[in-house]
Structure formats: structure tokens, C-alpha cells
Amino acid sequence: MESDRRDHRPACLCARLGRLLRRARARSARIAVRVLVTGATGLIGRQTLAPLIAAGHEVHGLSRHVVDREGARWHSVDLLDDSARARAIELVGAEALLHLAWHTDVATVYNDAANDRWLDASIDLIARFRMVGGRRAVIAGSAADMTGAPRAPVPVHAGKQALHWCRLPAMAKLRTPCADTWPNPTEV
Image 1 (cartoon, helix red, strand yellow):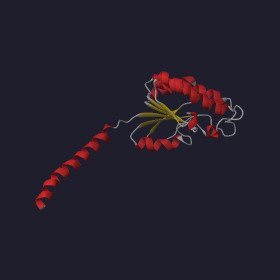
Image 2: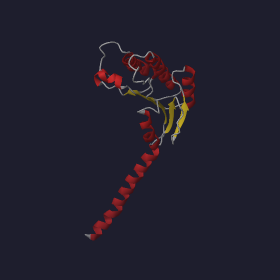
Image 3: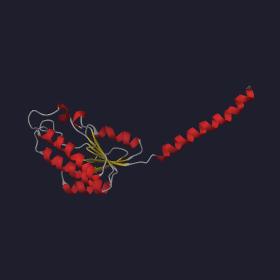
Image 4: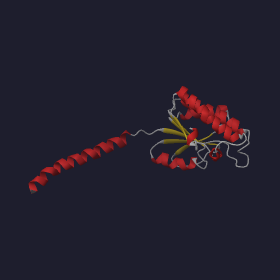
């Protein structure tokens, strides 16, 4: 009986080592991705940096002001400036985009004409991202979207909804997988 146990130990040990080697290979096979985070100093953006860095990704943060956050490379960019936006996208050459930037002044966000500029800038950002080899994009909605359909036209809602609907054919044409955090699943 005891000899039977000893005979199985090498087989169990080999199986265990095999599992450990397969796990190690799987971990080493994970490829670090260059991720561009717009709105990286915002409420959501700043919470995404540490997990991305911890996962081994090369993180590039875009914000209006350069911030010294360990592990991320910072770029001071006004995304509403066409040439600055184009330079930043080309410079970073990201494979993944986490687009969190938008006009966020609580007092004016719902009716500000800046929403139209943000819509145009966002569409251009995604198109340029794809042109430099970008493969995956995540686009965030906002609290303004969570109220459902507005009773009266509200620029921020219209802008976010337009970006959502523009994204669908644009992503099909650009062949870029794209997800968004649209809060109303029935509208997706």
C-alpha cells in the first residue's frame, strides 16, 4: 500500500509542475499595452491609472495640466485644439484608448455650446487614434446621460448621444472595437 502512494507522488508532482509552468507561460504571454487615458486627472480618470499601471501597461495620461503621478507618462493637451490633439495622438501611438474627457463644469454642462466642440473633438480623436494603429477604445458617458431621454433638447445629452450613435458606424468603418459606458442598456 505504501509503495502505491510513492508511485503516485511523482505523477502528482509532474502534474502540479505542469500546471505551474502553464500558468507561468500564460502570465509571461500577457502583452503590455500602451493605453492613452484622456481626462486622466478627472474623477474617473485618476482612478484608472493605478490599476492599468499595476497590470503592466504603459499608461499615457492626457490632461490640460501636467501632473506628476508615478508610473504614467503625462502630456499636457487641450483636446479642443485640433493640432494639439493630432500631435498627442501621433506622439503616443496608443493601442488602447480610454476616453473620459468632456466639458464638466457642473453649472454650465447641460447647456454649454462647448458640448458641440467636445463632440467634434471626440469623433476626431477616435478617428486619429485608429489611423495611428489604435485597436480598442472605451468611451465614457456621464451623469447627464443617466436621466434617460431629456424632455427638452439639452446640449450635453445631445452631444453624448450623438457621440454614441456616431460611434457605431464610425467604428464599423474604422474596424476598431469600441465599448462605451452608456448607462441605458436599452439604448445600446
